[in-house]
Image (tube, rainbow, N blue to C red):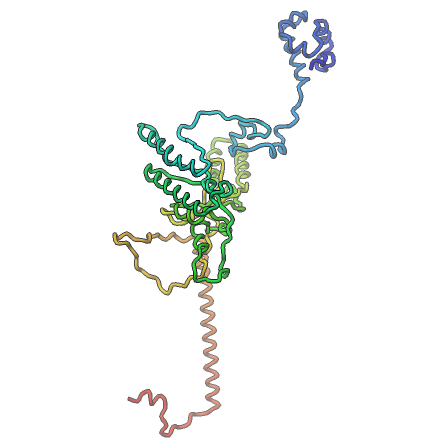
Length: 442
């Protein structure tokens, strides 16, 4: 910038250049680095307003255009990370941009405490020493929230043989898993808190009908599908939980979360768009027709967006029956909705059909029913329609069968009459006993 002469700038007029040259202000540095009061003294007849105007003209001409346009769609697509919130993205200039160093400052959360455990030994020390001391100290102070939740992320990594070679010995891993289960159950019962463990999965190879040589025998693979794999959606059984049946027997509940390739429109899953009809009606009362139509167009465009949704399955639980649902992650958080497909059959072998239904209700000695009395759900309209159509088809088939049966009976009777006519009257029986005589003989 020191070599830029004011005489070469196009934004300054010739009288301005002459006045600056007489004041010995020839370069851009002479103009910008000197105080405005000194320039007023040097430039005869100019005041502070004229000096500021000259400085603005020079700065505007020397200003360089940015090499990257921020509103360029291609740039934003490859160099930005959204926060999933439109208001926050707008405040951040579109989201978090690459090539920058960001810092988020704020007050520390007083109700969330974290500790790092890299191996089973550290986890044992936390559960036996550090956490009981922490929980007891909070319980002894009035007005302080007690500890109610423990989250371990990721629990299966602590017993991964690739990270910890000692767990190549399955017996050693089983002993440590039982010890960890004992500590977690003791803490959950003593302090009445929930323990949530985040685990990983691996690819499974489930067997299908006809692939085994002994259908009458039960193997571990047959039973593992009930507690290690989801079974409410096709393809969900291709992944199973780690750590095997030893760890599954230590759990009270297991939840399986699966990514899918299925898509749904946003208006089907977003509660805000589903309820937007009432909102548009209320806004039309306050806005003119142009603004109301623009709002309706924007909501319709947002509703046409296709969202990939995931699947959640309760593999087993001690407090609820197995269930499943689909969910998506939106700006307002996680939104769940009923599954799209019905669960397939989970029987590995064909089960014999029940000959009759039993009305006996089994109960314990205390009189508590062992099987909960589940109330039947009301039938869906589609199922009712399908049932009616099926009954109509069965009735039509029954009528057609009856008509064909009557026709066959008539043909048989006509053939018998024709045969009797050809044979003539029956011959007389001279003392010969017939079957009818034997039947009526006392």
